Each structure stands twice: as structure tokens, then as C-alpha cells.
Image (cartoon, rainbow, N blue to C red; front, side):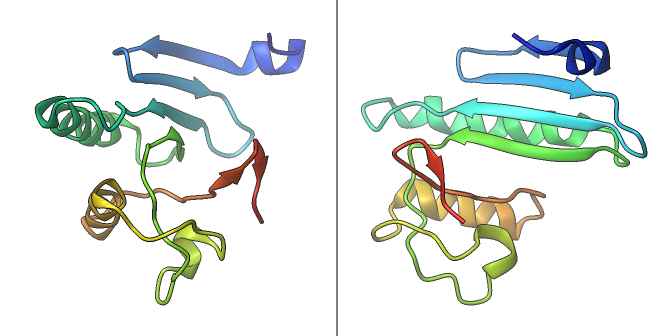
Length: 127
């Protein structure tokens, strides 16, 4: 699924759970670590969601500090469109009113998660 150059740059990948996959790529000046998340749906039990965030925190701590980290995926969260003070994190495109999952994401970023939110609409990146 990758072109030859991208395939040669793969340092490793690991599907770590039903919801998370890690991948690491060799870069020119820095390596790139990607954590792809497909969060549980709203129908999931709260313990499952809490476990996901605890596991993510551990995965993030294991990423080499010199790597560029991309934390991407479907969080099943709304972060709302008001971004005052958070412009560098979420850009100018949010959706709806922040829900409980969106609040959890905000708390994680306040705690130091090096992530960026770029919401998508109909599969097209906003921004």
C-alpha cells in the first residue's frame, strides 16, 4: 500500500489493540512516529474508553523525544468551533458543541500531549 520510497522508510509498525496502531518512519532530520486511533463509540463502556487513554499515554511516553509525533484518527469526539487560546492545536475548524470526549481530549492536551487536531468533514481535511 506504500510506494517504494515510503516502504523503505518504515522502521516498524505494531497494531497494539483493537483501537490503536503505531508506526515509525525514518526521516531525513527526524524520524516520524504515528499513532493511529479509532476510539470506541459512544455505546462503549466507560472503562474501555478510560483504558484507551491510559494506554495512549504510555505509548506516547515510549516515543523517542526526537521523533515528530502525529496522533491521528477518529476520536468520536466533538471539540467545538471555539478555539480561543488553542489556535495552534486545533486550527480554526471545529464542530458542534464540545462533548465529554472532546473535554477529555482537551484535558490530555493540557497535560502535555503533543497532538494536533485537524477535523475532517466528509473525508476532506479542513484547513
